[in-house]
Amino acid sequence: MVNIIEVVARVHVDDLDAALPLYRRLAGVAEAKRFEFGEVQLASIGPFLLLSGNTAPYRDRVATLVVADLVPVIEALEESGGTILDGPSPTSNGDRLIARHPDGSVFEYIGKGAAI
Image (cartoon, rainbow, N blue to C red; front, side, top):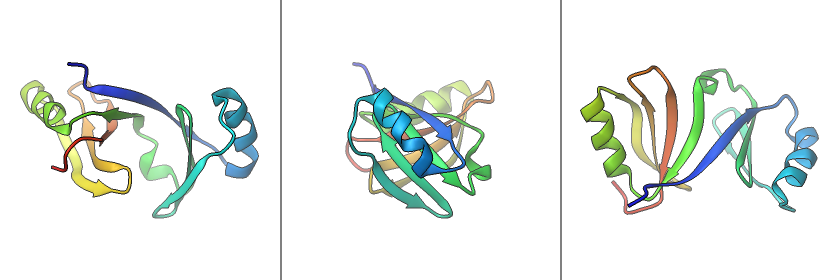
């Protein structure tokens, strides 16, 4: 069973409003879902997640991976020597966790399945 549903590219921009027209055109999407997380303004548009504001704490994240279920992710991380840095915790988009893989890469995972 394939667990990764979607890979979302994280793009840090200085001006969210100025960046949106290009990313709307690239994604072929008319509207972006806009929301805030702390001091960061975000826009989800197709395969892109645009971040603006105080993004320094989040710049180490390679990508956001949307998965069917977080349980296999947690098991794989534990078995491979990875580290869960934050979560899992519920968000409006699904259960979320931040993990450092054994190679040092940091990913955000959003689980669309049952709550952890």
